Image (cartoon, rainbow, N blue to C red; front, side, top):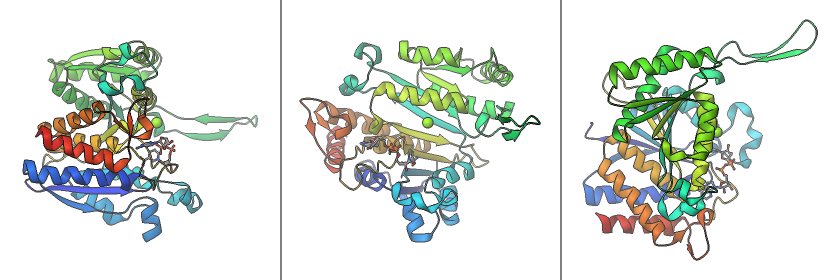
Length: 369
Ligand code: NAI
Ligand code: MG
């Protein structure tokens, strides 16, 4: 691991900068109490970059992301940039980063923290202690496969085409991420496809099975058809540890899984690329929520998804497992003490804003440490 940890911080728009500010407190804590320091660069992206530079992300920011050991992203977008046109829209900032850094594995944890067990629309008994990780392939599959398009047939009717394409290489690299994760968790991977009706799914199953046999015999591997997986996630979600799946099924299943927790403002994510010749892996961490224009600028946003994204960054990019655990523990304590932002408010709890929540996390950390 490099001694000088290079971190690129991209707060973005709307609530992005508000929740990112709360991460700043944790950076201070890491330095003061744990002797961990970062070399931090901050840049504008999204609408903020459009306003300042005319484009959603500048080439030098993409380069800074390549040079960094990890990128911490807030959120981009908002109605004030609706007029800029499709080719310049703020959301291109994140799409460009994913493409340019080759970020092919999206990690979406769905964790139910005990104090929030009642936020789920499912019964508390079904989701209590839930802790699953969905690994979604993000650069291949039906969203990118060729041929694609809409064509007009000789009889004048039209035909829309999209094609699911996966190569062994694409399947192996994302499955490898899942197996490595499982080793750090509960050692079980469930691979999800539709091998009963899709050849690409059949290949997916073969490749994952072979990889497990060859390199990860210690990890328990199971297979599930995607439709059944959707049912099982609602029926008995705790049966899963790590789920690995393609782009389309992962899109649906990760949104489904995140709503098992009932709290958008609580959920972090990571997107990882391939390890290079120097052992470096490009990685971007961001909350799953967007820029929340409806509450932006009012100090109401829940900073915990951004804070938990930072904890993931410490864990997966810097091997700072102990520090990541402390931050997660601090968030749990703050919730247990009854503090709630509006998005997770429930009767009898104390309603607070963004900075009070962030301060409380910092205070808990100082106590735990
Ligand atoms: P959103 O996630 O921004 O908001 C959905 C709802 O959840 C809103 O009611 C919002 O107030 C609430 N919410 C979101 N984050 C919250 C937080 N931290 N604390 C409390 N409440 C929170 O999704 P929406 O409204 O569909 O999109 C708004 C903008 O964000 C759009 O321009 C969209 O393109 C962009 N977006 C950007 C993403 C990114 O940067 N990766 C991801 C998703 C959306
Ligand atoms: Mg989605």
